[in-house]
Image (cartoon, rainbow over all chains, first blue to last red; front, side, top):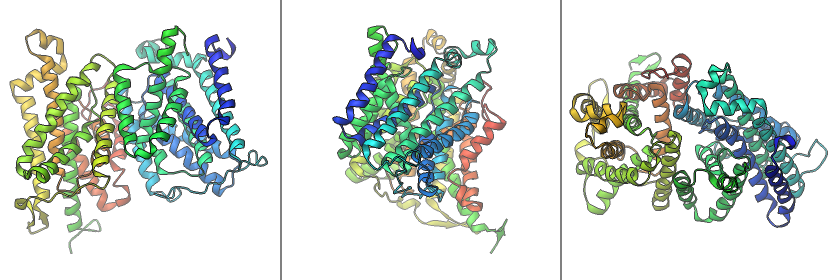
Length: 311
Length: 295
């Protein structure tokens, strides 16, 4: 029971770390870094949907704004890699504070619609604002040296940084879920009126969870802009909000490892289907329909259910 | 030139008409969303895609079968209504009793499939559809020149909204629908075929969206992306108005269209986001929505 991990989870964690270490020998590091960024993004999203029961349909806003701000600080203020990524996280957190504060006034389906509408507002802002570069996005973002000294030009050097960012974020999310705070979040998910009657200020808990989730999504977005050297409208578009839901749904909502697994599958799907143009959208839609109808636990959730383990 | 608050009156009238047109689409779509949500407890994300399909069916009827605009006003909603009934029977019905969030995700998936298929077929730029001859040209009202088609869209949508409202509030069918929205098992116990009613309601909502699509077809190009961008705004409209009241949806839809039109005149940069800003203000002042009941 180290850090709140059960033995099964600890084994899975060791396996995941081993895969992260070995994988670059087999697969392209850039592809793996994209998966790690998406994995962190989906894990952050899962913190809300899986453990508080809040469906945010606008997480692209924090991911995309994190990506923009990290790109901008790296390019114009010459922030080092870690500071650029952190500036993305701070942006996501602040934006999450504003959106969360508004959206938690309504429950369930309205919460989803409000977050979607507000993220569309962020999208329009990014389309019009001058600092985002409009349709072109922010291009040629430098890979700044880590801590201002260690060069990051090499893909493998950056890979270890992104892997570290991912792991820290992943462990933090796990820690949040298994803290007393996380237990209250799950109580709210299970029975909000009862949590209120027990004296918890559920709105404060929801808001903090929302801010944490948005900040981690911002970090994931910032990391992605460092990997690809570009920040564009794609990352703030509503379809990205849909994609993070899809990743989490495939992997397993409310499981620790599910979102990471979902991000891996999603990354592979996107890469291999890229040549088929809009069939990616069709496939995504079809997977959505299939998952919702027949596979609501997701891969890891189903696996855990078969093995009677919490993964 | 007559000016009002520093803007030419002509410009104001023009944008107000465009605002009314947008408002007409908001009203038609949010009305359908409200009716479907009331009975099925599903927020129909595919509503925008069905709207878009309505426009494409109109285009297809003309291009492949030579059937013009007027018959399409009936045929396209019928076709999409049947499609809606099939979707409800094969997919949405399976979610009965689950968290409504799953309904949102399922219909979102349907929207992606429909949109992706249409983009594959027609590309993102879309296809043109000419304004029917009887409605082309403009009338000079003295204070402004009003394109006939724009006037038609506003009137047709308003009449349709009113008709839906009358059916729901003033007929036996509507009374049953309202009763089933309150308590479906009880209505079923009285011998009403509620599952069939649910299917027909979804079909009617889909047909309403398609009717909007037919009206929209000659406005700009008929393109695969016309639905989803609209539906996100309509979600904001629904949050503002609340889904509890039919008349509320209609008033909110038209009202927000007018606000959007006014914003285009006085602060064009804000016209894309003004509805979201209104949503924020409403959330701050009246979290349950203008016509919603407190949770």
